[in-house]
Image (cartoon, rainbow, N blue to C red; front, side):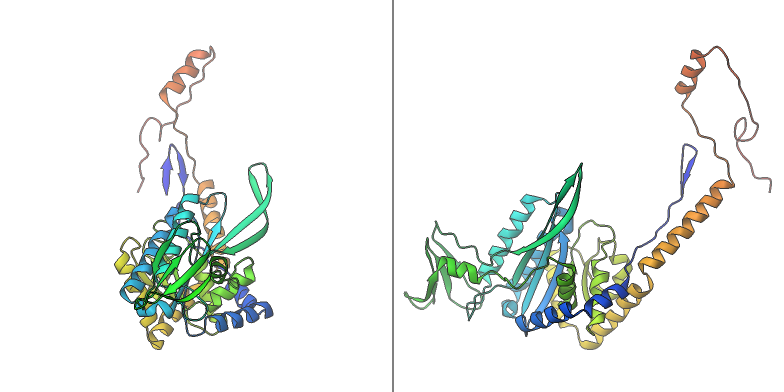
Length: 371
């Protein structure tokens, strides 16, 4: 503990947890099962990465997007196989400049790696969750949560620009009112559509996270959960992901920042990475999707074992035990508060009646053991 001017503070390491049975029950709900079936149909044949975090610099969102871009640049054939769904929780603490930068990265990555076959789409989905509420003093009371998905490709209707497409020699050219897809071997567009129609096709309208049930379905569905915090305490969302995957009979694969507090708890079942090492993080993306079934199963067992034993109830029991222990120890010891000499001098000079009481041990001499 810490002894500060006669006041002793007990210090303990008590990692928190969740109630896994709660999430097991939520995953069995009809709304979640129905939504899970819809996601499986929409992303059939895709490997889905999922992230959930606030829009704050220490969450490592920029680092995550840059690593995902590096993955697609190194392995362009994966553009049609992998999907990253990032849910951003917006609040009064959110950094608007960071959100704008994220939008730019989404546009850049999806414009470069868009799939123009059938319904145009990109590999990166950004979902924002906005909480609206009534303000009472300085506190905001949440009433509703609304989620939105941003467009995949940002079509600038005032300036012409050319966007190269991955895996082909084709490219897009957008004008004020239309979007044209050209083949690198020809001078005539192979397809043309209006800018409004094209922009609308880029919005993943089926993806949202405006309720706990929607989020539960996404956690149950994702093949890999990734957290790239560059400085964070205990983030329990990876625990929730593991519980949801177990509930639907899947395996939980985690990529965690080595700087995250949860990495010390789940590190035995997760792939750890340094978010500042873009190439190294991109390699962990590849490692996650290259794991064999037995490897994924063993990692899942390690994660699930921790989640099921280090629950919120266990955390509360340990906390109460430590509080009682500290209270008992404090009641058996007497501490004298050290006061400043100037404080004593001022009080001594300001009064005419003075009573001085001296004790021997801890006052005139230092305390000593009798043993």
